[in-house]
Amino acid sequence: MEQTIKVELGERSYDVRIGPGLLDSVGPTAVELGSVRQAVVIADSNIASRYGRRVATSLQTAGVATDMFEFPSGEANKTMASFSDLIDSVFTISPAVDRDLLIVACGGGVTGDITGYVAASVLRGVRWLQCPTSLLADVDASVGGKTGINHASGKNLIGAFHQPSGVLIDVDTLRTLPADDLRSGLGECVKHAVIRDATLLDFIADNTAAILAGEAGVMCDLIARNVAIKAAVVAGDERESGTRAHLNFGHTIGHAIETIVGYGTISHGAAVSLGMIAANAMAVARGLIDQGDALRVADALGALELPTAYSGLDPEQVWDVMQHDKKARAGRVRMVLPTEIGNVDIFDDITAREVAHAVSALE
Ligand SMILES: NC(=O)c1ccc[n+]([C@@H]2O[C@H](COP(=O)([O-])OP(=O)(O)OC[C@H]3O[C@@H](n4cnc5c(N)ncnc54)[C@H](O)[C@@H]3O)[C@@H](O)[C@H]2O)c1
Ligand SMILES: [Zn+2]
Image 1 (tube, rainbow, N blue to C red):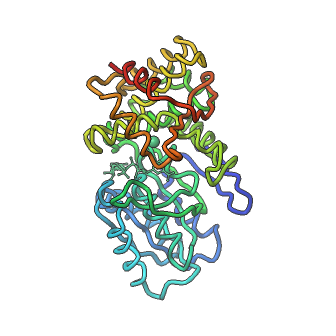
Image 2: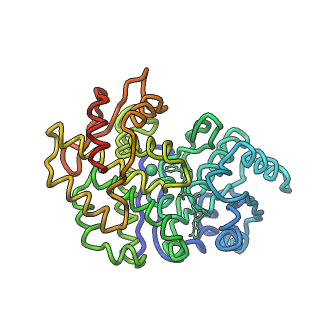
């Protein structure tokens, strides 16, 4: 069942292992890295006792002196205050911090992002491992080396690129993941299918029941296919100067919806699902894909219990928010649109009228 995907980034390359029971392999993996003398495990308050302690035990059993620190769970705590507290905690360990320290993230995407930023910052960068426990972190956040925290001015505005030395995805952890969080990850899986691989859309449609039930074998295959796509995108454009932006498919209108409706009111997965429906409607109107393609994607999302309709959005407000998105350049709205299922392009000539039409497709 276990699979390994390599993220090819020259001297920064690393393996992503996917399988059951891998939380207990963190210790041996750390030893294989070489010259790891001590480790710090970082987990949020939901995950520390549930999974973090097992990771710490695995490290200690392998002979690596290990401390564990936790921070309060949730996006609202992906802040400078949590970051600062964690940095202070890391510098309390004994013997003192040196370059042989390994930092290990255990948890969802919030934990991965903040822990990675701690690892990027301590001594200007020490090695770190990711043990993602949410599907969104498995298929998206744990691969690619984007780390960071939120600021009052916006999400993910502070951070660094810092690739991990390895990723261990223990699919058993998905058994305790709340259903809404599972769906958030599934939204990103459909996104990957649309931007790179039509056969992944078929796989998702053919295995919907097993996926929603979290069947381990199917989840391993699903995660491996998605990690392979994300890894290839990142390998082609590590710092997002070009094609890495394809990963924003569904996110431009999706982020606008999150902003308007309010973060926390709508899940990220739900917003991205709606964003993909709207982007596909725009692509149909441009003649890039046909209605049948758009329906295939909508059917897959609907079967996964992700929303495909939302009424009452004000198209002018959506346009206004899109113009102020951090990814817009000088007020020019850029969007990723499919040219067929499995292929996308970046368009920077999006008009307010097209957005109004796309938003009306959500009614
Ligand atoms: N770095 C990147 O490239 C990248 C990419 C996508 C998203 N992200 C970031 O990821 C974050 C979202 O990730 P997320 O959805 O995992 O959020 P999260 O880390 O807040 O996890 C969601 C909730 O699920 C809980 N949880 C996680 N795993 C669990 C499990 N196995 N069992 C029970 N509960 C569990 C968490 O404690 C939390 O309450 C956002 O901050 C986003 O910016 C980063
Ligand atoms: Zn996303």
